[in-house]
Length: 337
Image (cartoon, rainbow, N blue to C red):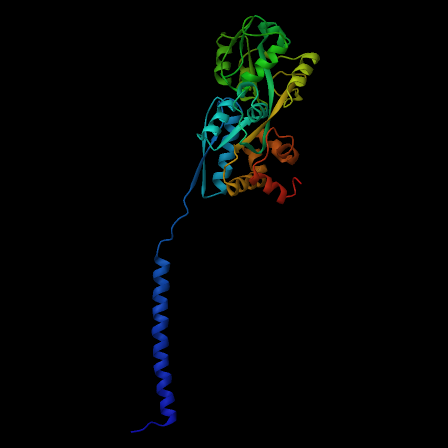
């Protein structure tokens, strides 16, 4: 029997509808299968930041930096590495043991240009993400020492800082200017925590710290021992500054430590977050961006990071060149030209 045109069209429509339903079902099944297939997770990038003795500023600053990055870059994990400080961190960056390092500006300068401890072995691959805080030279002595100026420490027992640390380096530079050396004075290597304990036990008469103020170990010592800050004379301070381009004149404001009634003139130096030149540009860009966007959080985590609110402090007068990733971010943000 032949079909009318109308019957043919109705039958064709029914067949098409069944076919369409089959296609839709297959697509839904495929989509469901795709949705249930676990997506490959992006691997976490693990980096290590070199800091210093836990009694100073570098360690808590490194911890604050790592905390902010870990919270705001989910695919990045920053581990904290304690060390003797800047010199050790330079060698750690050079050898690949660490990925980021907190380095005092004077040490970074010497490393880049191959001067002082780095004579004959410059690190031309050293790069900066930016300055993060300001370290100041603090000398503290027992009241019983009868010392007023740093040069009064001649012949006494003095802790200059951990061996091969920035604290020791700056202490020896300052002591040389005022006529003190290991042949006429007992100079010993103690970190801030160990130095405070040694002073309480009567093993030393004075100690030096180069860190963001107030230095906690010294702050605690002022509460437990009758002591005071020592001064440089104007001529001594000028000589220290004239011979060291990375040092800047500054003061320890009255009231920084318990019983401190007057400002104490001293010198200080920027501490810089450094990396190797071969670190991935996008990684450095992202780290720089997060740190710039997190200055308020960083300040809350450690008081010395208040300096990072000043973009000129972060980006200008650095001892080594900026890493291309950091430089790109600062230019895009209009912070440098």
